[in-house]
Length: 537
Image (cartoon, rainbow, N blue to C red; front, side, top):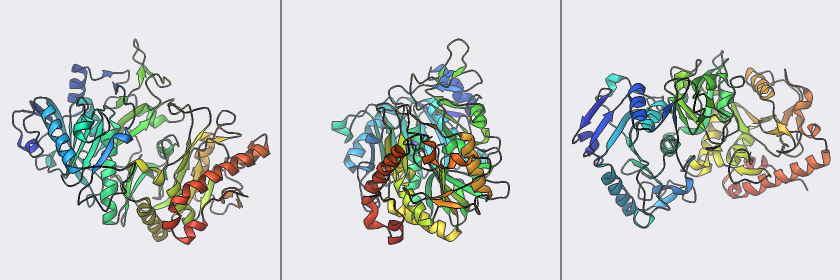
């Protein structure tokens, strides 16, 4: 189907999933047409600079407790069932699917035919059907758009149906609330209903890739990736708020992607064709590329507030949510890769935002330590980043730096990562972008300038010969010197005014690491267990 076609009546291509009797369908509309429809329907407004600004109502983030996978012969043995991957029986999904089909029967829908995966060997063809125009633009931005001549013969591997106006009934649909995200791997359909948060579209496809690719020997990763001027690539693991997107958008390096990648026998490839950046307190000085991309036509802004008169973005306004987002095509970043692919990484960087203020700002990891920290997936949340948190930082351990999106057992992903690191000899680093000089509320956030300097030194090889000291609390090897970084900034204990308080806080955090890792000890090698953090006596 060529771009920009509106069809009325029975559509055979949608009829295969029971949506052939929608009132009409807009196929593969471009940004201009989707803007027009979104504004006409009052789904969003145009802000100064040209971005489309949309609000998502009560759901300003993911709904993890409302996510399900159909438990059947295809998924039974491969899915790590539990609180993250909740089962739904086939009959319940069928009832839900029929009710969503009925809901959309006489409505207008928007359809985008897209690819997930820059490597043709491993990419998925995904058809995204949405109730609203702005969600269709979001999908168009986030995934890889096929050339026009490939649209006429496009056959989807999977279909994502997004219906925010539909309200699920737990008694009928086998879910928890009016919101439901349900994936059926046998029928190759994902339903997203009862939420307007666009990130559910992106994360559903990411979870799908996470499930399918390990069976083909590909390591799926929640990470950003870039390439240096000498052709050396780097990957950056990290949870929200750790700087994964910011630090990978380095003007001196080519951006492969900001969030989701695969690591195959041939190297790295991006799953996406766009970026989904958190923009609360976004700074033109600190993050010029993301800032510029968020102020232009074609970008979708989620829950960002603007001045009602001038329409200037108020990027420090938290009245709707902390989780304000900017969604834009990858080519809005000036130095973005045209192929979405790169060689095997020379450096693997794991980011943490330690709000307790005790972890070193950078450390060299052995391969075993890398697997340990990958399984741990540590960061810390603070009251300023999420609702409902108290004054004290909250330690968070999200396995594989993306537990909500990992359908298989964590050790499967860790094993794949370990094999890739061993085969390529990649250098591994742990970088703390959190607090120093004290915990959150007492100390201060790490200087982004210092963090960038440390990363540059690591990626450029300047730390390969630097003398290292052993951190007594976390077993990490910390450089004693780094170009363009004050020596004192490399020593977190020295940054505290009360060394005794530092020692106590560090021992406490080490104990949290130890407690969290107990669940993995029976399924990892002795060498990985030996690399684990232990609380000092």
